[in-house]
Image (cartoon, rainbow, N blue to C red; front, side, top):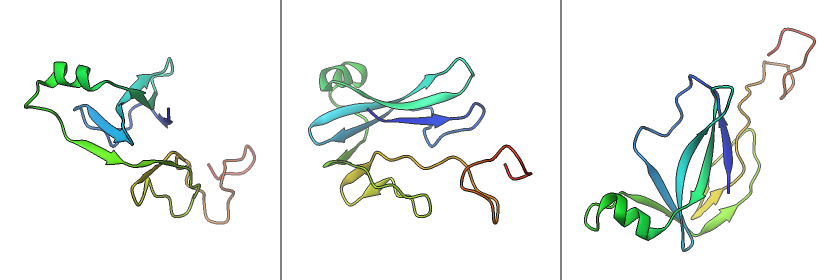
Length: 112
């Protein structure tokens, strides 16, 4: 599904509690997959409603965000994760350019 890189030591938007989303009729669990570098990649993995009921019980299910589908709308200036009822699979660039600098870091110069 979708992956998002999260540097080590930086807290992501995810808290300690588990997060689930439904896209169309498919249930996904948002997980942080550890990397050897100590960083994480956020992934959406398929999950079953039966496993969700086993984990939480029938009457104690977590809140599940619902989307009609996925879209891909790239934007580095005005990034939005959600467009209407669609979840944007495009991920923002984790680099903030310096004034007058390039969008991406360069080896020469002081702008990183």
